[in-house]
Image (tube, rainbow, N blue to C red; front, side, top):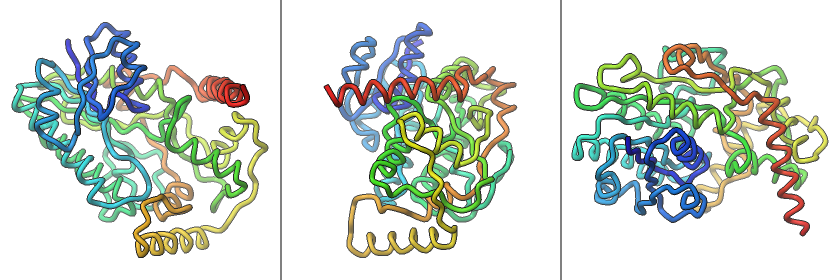
Length: 335
């Protein structure tokens, strides 16, 4: 089978490409730019913009399945930019499946599509979409996911995966932000200490996509379904952040600010940055405050049962790998 991975040069996309190659698939990656790591894997790279239908259609010629992991992530930015990539880009992938009669589509979604600002303690896939979102990212990913699920039918089998807080060596998003704040002395814990969250080590998240592809077919039990993906090891915000700090040689963070103050600061920063038209991400946003002050961990029984998913890399092993990776980075910086 020949598989196209959109966003194949990204953190998750490159890990998916690596595992697909190891599993014996012929793999193409659709990216904005070329990536040496993909070349080293022997992955064919097709260059273009996910928001451009002609580019997506050209990149999808002669493939049997698509893993759509491309997307705009973040806690801040213009709704238009998120919509262009996450919604219009997904529409283009669905149109391409129809144009080229591609009958398998695995979509990378996010648990944030069901996060409305309150606690999510061990919920499963039956939890509904909220009526309000505090970020353009969550809102546009929810719209894209709904389009993917609605497209499932007699000609196309679709499945949406919701991996939560993907992390590991090479993470370009959450982990570097935490470490930068720690180095600058600006990191603070927020709110209650007993709220738990789920995370997903990068290799586990990638494997879930490979398993989903292998189980997917028109009319299969997994078609038209969503699946939460995680470590299956809920951990408190404080324990997670301090585990990451320890991996980079920092002492534990104990300083904490009240939730009310954090919400006020997040709203204030958004107002000021919006009024000034600043493109950089504010130090704090309402979405980040929600993510850091509420419980969001999930029941992954469905993924275990239907996909055969098992988190092969435990939290302890993942943290050990991360510690080694960060140590190598520090040595390279000193060299």
